[in-house]
Length: 247
Length: 247
DNA sequence: CGTATCTATATGTCTATACATAAAATCGTG
DNA sequence: CACGATTTTATGTATAGACATATAGATACG
Image (cartoon, rainbow over the protein chains, first blue to last red):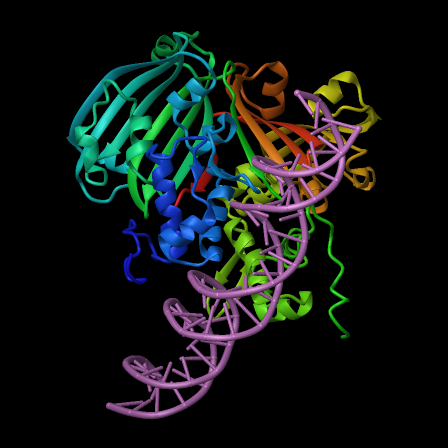
């Protein structure tokens, strides 16, 4: 190693301050699975050496990640990648496959429809995209222990997420694929209740007129729309739980 | 002012480290309205003098509050109390009166029932409280422009929140009162969809069988249950929106 | 008067250091 | 070996100082 000119290459950030770069770098390793849940993150003094900075700086990056519940810090023991909790996962990460797996149930996935087209006016309105471009439209169904769990209707902006063209949504659910391949900066959920019409009732194997929970989620990266998804859950058998810290 | 022995009295915290005490102190002033939205918080060097600590320490407290969207920091201008945004408010703060007022609609409140009793087994189960004690049970209705907006069914643990005995829930909605008088550390929301039964339909002025959104919220202070509330919203006319930052 | 430039200043980041604290690991003893 | 006391160590908090950066407000200029 030579002098302080050869810091490791790091992914770019909004304002590439050092602690943000460190945070993003570690976050990337966690989200890609390079550092799986339970993995011990290098000690602060190791990170100091790796990034050639002071302990306060790596500590700030780690504290940020700890506050986001991505890692857990234990005195004397070290810092570890947390396994995502079901509670916070629902509204934050919202990967249905991980959610069902975490519940210890058998995950089932079924692609109903997947098509690629030039965005219609309705598609653009739904995404909130200004200019015309290509989109992927996906309909699929998630099940737990062979019982329908949710149906998903998604639109992905192919110009914002060109890698999605190569993804195989017949085998991997789009939510999981996106979570692991596409970083996002903002997400908005909008939740309401409806009663099942004939189509929803058939897909979810419930009665017509039964209550359903609808979640519309929009995701952006730096104000650019990435994807819009509508999830339909059977209403009473299902609860969304979110936990917040206020202290 | 004498020497460093006379720091201002601050409310207690879990681990009363200095920056947490500062954070809590400022948070209290904001939540009680002593520092209303738009108010400029003292400059860092003023806070340094007030709390007799270094700038890094007050900066950490302020950064925490900024991350929680309670304040906004602008270079050269200073630090200001943010006016709560509707978006994040819904699932985080959940003060229905503030929510409706922020929408520019006329808020209406109607106390349906309010009683004080020794906690039954059902009450204890609902609160998650271990020991028996006094509780307040409240039923009320919120409306916007004279249209029913939500009905509320709440239980408050009087042992954990003794001040509630003196509150007048005939004029002030319990959610607003609690928000301004009782600090909490954890909250959990659980959301599902149901269809309106006869009673709910009458209270919300909707059809029997119409979809309703149900939010069950539990709030704790340092793992001690404070209150449990069930909110019933008309399902389709209403959307809950929550926004998250992931970057 | 409007506009471009400069300056003062509050926040943002970073360093090097110090001591506190919790808990894992070790040691010593019965 | 079991168990309590001691040591070690990684994180947690705090400090004083430095420089960066954005920008509100003052100033100079056309």
